Image (cartoon, rainbow, N blue to C red):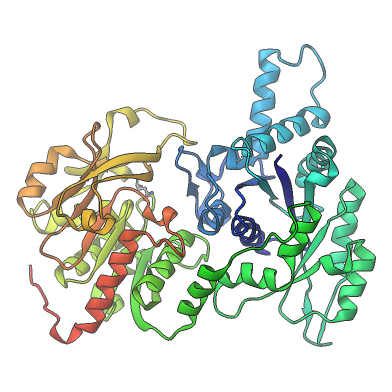
Length: 543
Ligand code: GLN
């Protein structure tokens, strides 16, 4: 029978609850158990797909085509749980479902209320998250305990623990111990109050995980245990990591979280988590590596979360290729206004991530041009591929009016809308979303990277490579190296006489894991390393 773990957060947001949840999932997987991972978000948007990166950071995409919270990325990087549209529910999604049922007459004339109708729907969502019948189902509750909007979710998990039996459930509360520099002390009061809020609802945490920048003292553990009604040994320290977020699971195990989980959930005695391969990974990360500088040219470089999965995928690729990736974050706007060489000089690779809208697009085109002309490894993702196609059409084919139709008519619409997207007015969930098959051209760089010719990758875009220009572009030397088998859409392009110039219409960054780096990121970083090592002989290719 599935055991359910609920992870709540207190005191402040951005505590790293997603990471901690992923780490807990990993501990169970390394005990040989299967897990499912889920996030419940109390905001009213149906999904984060239409939210600005300033509000929400990266939008994560699942194989089955839902736009979801970026914490799902942590789950996929830390575990092998199947991540689907049932892995993320928001208040908006829950209410939409309840309102649809009410309109259909499913409630048979009853007054529809938060309790029991909304809470029932939340409980249904929790069960949907565990349809694979895993050994352990982990559900993270977004937001901070004490928020008005979290209340129905907390009420629902309290009820849920009664439904499945208290012994089949575990509540983990993640909290912050703020450090007061002036008095040189960590403070426990905010945590006491946040647990107090939880207890008002009827939830007493079984485990208290304390985020802290300094080590906790024994007295503090005593105090937290006493005031929060949590066993002393279940007060766990989660100190800020020194060099990598991938230390988090190991640090939690060092604090004894694994044996507590085994005991509290009644798992077979002696169950141990095997972290050998993970410890070897951490050793690799700690070793001094060759430093390679990669430029990331994007619109939201000042936001840490906007390109989360790209940064992670670069780190994984670095581990695999013996490289420390140093990032030069370049605002695409700046690049549009300045000489490319002023901002890109000396980089060993250029990564252009996805994006939307006119702002920054010309800067991305500049970045693609600089990489192509100077033989600098280039990886263009989604908008980054589209920018590369536009650049090639303009510079090599001489089609000065080539662009995307995303922000207006184009003389040469080399990137354009598919017929099925014409006339789509609604913004939410209407892009080309989720996993699509792709056939790779034998002998191409992409096929070489993947080591096979049939792949499936996740998409999130509206515009496409325009096949009306395909022959012209191919004759000029651009290779369409990845094609959707039935829709005949160009999903990957490359330049064969360039050390590494690849553009993909899909999002490889979502599928990279620390121990299983994505092949395209891996080969891109390897090419950047090669470029760094051979700079003395750099050949500047004039157009
Ligand atoms: N704006 C482009 C499109 O909609 C690219 C999207 C993206 O980069 N994710 O097609």
